[in-house]
Length: 192
Image (cartoon, rainbow, N blue to C red; front, side, top):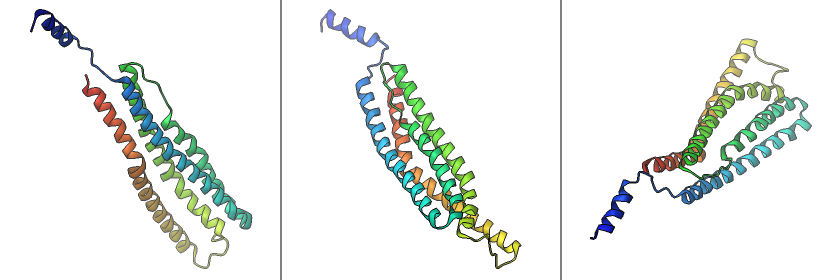
């Protein structure tokens, strides 16, 4: 080895600047957002179909409109919330990459938290609305105490079903996307 080669090795080893492939990172984020966008589009169409299908019985049972409006309110809140999680960003520097990944991770966590709060708090209110729409409030054939206990019991069963379904859905659909983001962030941190 001659002196020039040693000098070149020493100068490259002396540099603390990591070699990050921003184009590769941008491509990974683009693939992640495209996968998430496909999942979100399917979910948005499912939400729209659910709202439409809940308004159809309202033409035959006018009291059902209370339940249909509740489902529509959840859909109107949920669709913009869902669109926030795959907002595209361009990455040009190390700080942009780290900030973008941290923002995407915090946005997904905020989406999980808000969705859980809304579903777990407001969905039980839809159960009495469904009973009202089906006419169960008009002619109670049992005593008021038993009727109230029965509605509370059904509401608790529905709440448990909503919590279980939502957690399984998040674990299958959105948790892998969050894990991919965390893996990208760890790869970026390990390059330093």
